[in-house]
Length: 354
Image (cartoon, rainbow, N blue to C red; front, side, top):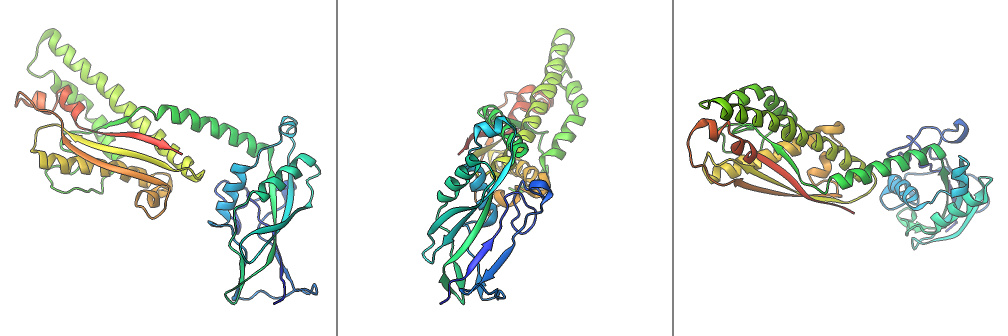
């Protein structure tokens, strides 16, 4: 079998064939990157590609290769301090057994430090899926530009710092609160199509009603204290929980795009007004409403991770049901009281990122 040479120019900053999550359409000096493939037989004559031929592939595709390069490469400090950018093209032969050999720089960036680092990164590549011709593996040559973009590096440093800061905040559990018997009151389903943001907005809109009723039947200082406490609960606990949920959702998108693995538990609770079986179903609906919000945020990016069709995110659901008991049947306590308000919740906890 003839040895085909394939030059595959794959930029990690393209929105074309080798699409990457954070790619730019244009590379250095306005040059547009894509995949330019040139095939030649052993005599150097060009050949026409056929449907029977496949090209060498990084496991997981071009996006996975881009992520690998971006996570593995280390921007040379002296060039970074000088705000210098450059691109080094590295060539490698992908053998039939998936190993890479004959790895060398074929187009220098003009800076030895860039060239040395690009060579180190490609030499560290795991085995690639080899090219095939009519389902038979064959050797092929690939060329991979490794891009060192100063502006991208600065943006990546900033994003990394933001993610580290977000991870510190995620050490604490996130608690979200619900109106009485929401979502889908008086139903016995464990799932719902309602999403938490709508429930949150409705709850916040009902704040004055909850504050007023928290003091119903009380007088003087007791009434004032009950109402002030309920208002503070809305302004602090309910609103803070929602804000932290949005931060967590943003963090999940960034972490999963970066190829990290995330795991957490989401537990649901209910105030002890209904029976325990009903409260467990209600707690399950509350959990689902939060996952619905996450699934629909960012254009639905997290949906395949949450439904399990894409790996990277593990969620443990834990509908605990009711919390404690009431010593009264007064609506002021069982619906509008602070204890009842604190019992109607879900908690996102045990968050790990690796």
